Length: 391
Ligand SMILES: *Cc1c(COP(=O)(O)O)cnc(C)c1O
Image (tube, rainbow, N blue to C red; front, top):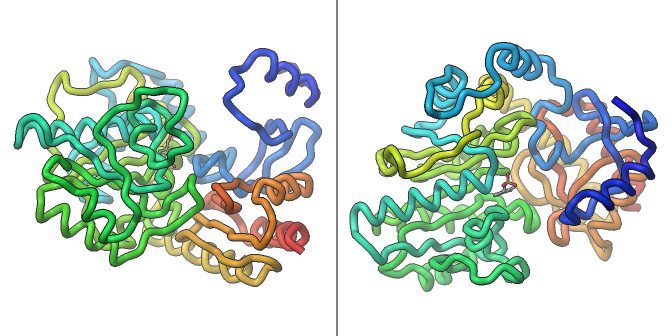
């Protein structure tokens, strides 16, 4: 490994990489848990966890051993053959959720692509052509592929790539507006229970209850996008468990692989037999190394551990609520949004970075997604930095 100084990395990134990212001015090189280092050895407390991906932080021994053990056996086999990690992980997901079948892809967008195909085929199998519309919510985020961008209810993202995929309509998260968007053409409603990218906004319980009920009544599928909220992030294994609903399809990704790319589309009772040979697939999907890592993550998300996550979340939220200029603390569990008075979230994130704290933004809010293994000391250090920056 040749170490480059930061300026060289920045210049070469600009020269050679597609200009898709506005990056923070730091190059991360190593770390342990929620404490990371750049190439100069400067330390950062990580309250972003790679956008909710590194569930057990960086360098977690259990995860590393699971991954290394699988790399030493076989790194990939293709879905033309059986592999044990894939089966083991699917079984564990099903055991913990009540889902009936799982399809593995490589990302959140891919998990959602699968859900969209499942919704359309479910309806086609039962009702024939024409019942293909999916209602999603305003300010939702479902991914960057053409289909998942089409599903994303943000006008600002519906530019440049026309035509988008037809068959999506965007409702406000209110009973009356949803009602207005449902039609005989509707095959599914797709939503995030806590909208992540658009500001960490949790949906209202009465609204979610209503959606679940109306979907059942009209044989419309309820798809819950748990790409960000899933895998312990909110203090339950999946956020739908806070709401006491049973969705027809749940998608997840980010934290599932513990740092390796893995997405899952889980199908419940009504949707379990929709996919058949030839109807969907993925070359890398369910890669044995990713699945072995995911198994080590998921098997440790026990009720006991999730109670600890809830405790950490309560501790952070209490203290965050008392910081200067914090108007509101949103979200559930360790998926936290901060509404700050009169300051831009991007400016706060930049100031935190200078002082050694990595935070994210989501529209006008600061977004905190610490790894689930974050320690009391790391939380206290982060709170001190935030206090300084917000004063
Ligand atoms: C991140 C995210 C996605 C997209 O996931 P990718 O892995 O980037 O494709 C989809 N839905 C939600 C709710 C997300 O937070």
